[in-house]
Image (cartoon, rainbow, N blue to C red; front, side, top):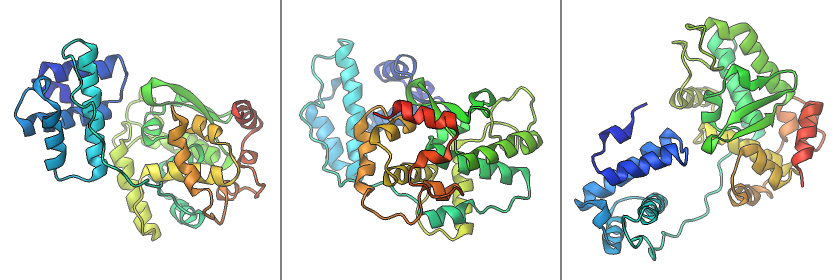
Length: 317
């Protein structure tokens, strides 16, 4: 992964990105994105960012040919940057203060129906990478984990006996997620029988490997998922996050408390999780239990191990 900090000359931007990296422990992808946004602003106004005024930023947002959602994202980045400069006493006032973000239509998460999930998961298992792909699909859907959390998953983070995985999410925060029986079996099959065919370096502890024996990338799995969706005849935009949305939507429609879903997804704020409540009245033909090839029993935690159910019960208000 490239380090955008090495390509930037503005010392204020460098200080800000290093603050995000070392003090806020923000992901490298986010740092790259923020750096690119700040460079775009700097190149557009042709000024040192520390000298910008409110009108400069408003003009940039008015003139740039971007969607309202993208403009709102830019404003979020700029506001964070200038708040940092104020905090560091480099400027007195935040030039973003008083700038209103574009009004956005509430974008409901895209999710897959149970029929689409069945099609997607119906992989012909002939090669080690097929078993890897199957395990990744099952784990992401069964846990709602972010793709970055799954691609970074190491063998030591899996506890097959207790039917849980420990993932490291945003802000380097760990959380424990129980795994359903079907996903657990797919993961066991891959780890115990097929992962060894992909290993090139015995010291590599990542669970999911590419054909070169290194950690599979987010972009790599995205391409795999798109290919599987096309072969399955699923005609909608799909990404690893679609599986995460499907997980949350199915839990909510089967009576799970929003705070439980918040805990499982690793959302810092409940407001982020509440977006799924807008989908609650939509009918989903089959629930999470059926999707995991378990009997339909009304509550999603019946597909989990005893320890998994105890964990969910412990975090339920």
